[in-house]
Amino acid sequence: MYQKIKEEISQDYYQQNFPNDGQKFVAWYLRNVHLQDENETKADITDGADDKQIDAIVIDDSSNSVFIVQGKFIGEDKVDAEPLREVLSSWIQLKDLVRLQETANNKLKQRLSELAIALDDEYDIHFELLTTATLTPSAMNDLATFQKQLAEADDLPATIHLVDNDEIQKRYEMALDKEHPVLKHTLPLENGKFVRLQIANTQSVIAAVALKDCLSIPGIKDGTLFQKNVRQSLGLSNRVNKGIKETIYKNSKEFFFYHNGITALCNKMEFEEASRKLTLHGLSVVNGCQSLTTILSCSEKVKQLEDSYVMFRFYEITTRDRADHISVSTNSQSAVKPRDLRSNDKRVLGLKKLFDQKYSTGYLITKRGEEAPASKDKKYILDLSDLGKYMISWHSQRPNIAYSETKIFDKYFDQLFKRDYRSENAQSLNFMMQGVWKRWSKENPLGLNESLLAMRAYAPYHHLFAVSLCFCVLNNMAEGAPNPAVAYEKLMSGACFDQIIDIAGTCLNSALEAAANEPQPANRVFSPQNWIKTKTCLAGIRAAIRQYFAMLPTMPNGKEMSQQIKNSLRMDASAFEARWAAD
Image (cartoon, rainbow, N blue to C red):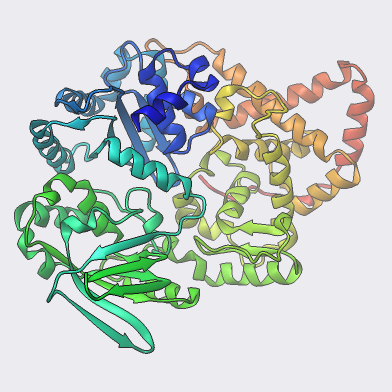
């Protein structure tokens, strides 16, 4: 991997944007493993003077996780514990964000502002020591000690993972298939510790699997193993996970008896009698996410354990409905939160039925991991998660909340997903957002600020919000939001769809640049990622749109353009409705 990375970081992107091999190495990892784009990678890198042993911070809202990376790009085979102590130092400093921000470099100050918001939202913290070398035996002992210390901390619980040469290779290969992950794994079974069954025409295996063998199961870290699970990791501070961790460290030989077991499904199961190896195709764990992620967080301790097992139930399940039912039914160890089961909510089922009937070539995806049939028109395919983000941005006028699926499907679900929500409104939002996404391509047709491009997880929903504000400003509506179907019809009949999408994006860009030019308090730097998640940005976008349309008549051909847009987008007050509460 060292030679491969060395060759790839010679590309123009790395040479032009990062001054040394250390930064290029971390940037390569962010792009190829964390799958950050070019702008996100540049924004994530914090390496340099006063970086406080933090080379990069990646905030992943989709998994409610923060990854803090320390990279060591060296050609030697071995590395001692010094990099580990640097990671531990950064963890200690992060406990006092105010003090750390006073002395950090500007890039780190900016990321710390975003980190603070993530911590308030109870994101999990993962430290990654990234190196192309292998730790010395004494350093491996230190890793196990530090891993335990971070996991047991009450003030800032976290995990620390060694991403060495072999792990980089594994994660790199998994990232190649991340878009369509189909996991395959061969698991060794011990003689006398498994039984094969045929129940209800279903091939099944019940086995006691060594805890250390769990570490080799793919897809635990990035969550792809749990696609059919009704929930993802609940974090190290969760009561159940604390109990699992305590058993690993204090009474590991009793783990098999204390634990309810793990349920795993696969599309195809093969067993080799001679070697007692079980090969699982299309592997997915539907009950056991908390257990496996906690086991991984204690990996160095787990590697040392002998005679410590967990029970696995492997089922060969070929139908999606049956797999979904098993997933829901087996998750009774701890309460399933409402957001985990929204795909089966009557309001969602009703919305899906109406949408699929209205658009025969369309498809509303309501379950995580579900794919629309190949025969459907991509323009009419809509994901329930995306629809929630569109609605909270348009109807609630709170795009600063759109990044959080947790809030959309828990706190604000009743306000957003109404059984009588019209399919025409849902598809109109879909059409308008498709227009927005075209402006967020690599070509950057609107010349958007790099800081905006680095926030593709948040800012495009502010762009959609800005489109709605164009109607509000042009119709002198200080309150309320326009009906999406009426708004879309106005854009198309007036032949100004592209024009308004462009204007909205330009005004969003202007609002960010105006905010960046405002004076900041001492020891603070402007953080675009922090700004985009606050209500302050909403007022800034509205002001930018007002200013744009006020100045439009003074631009070349502006009077004609202004009048054309006003005539095209004029709407009755009845086409506006009160903002849906989301505060």
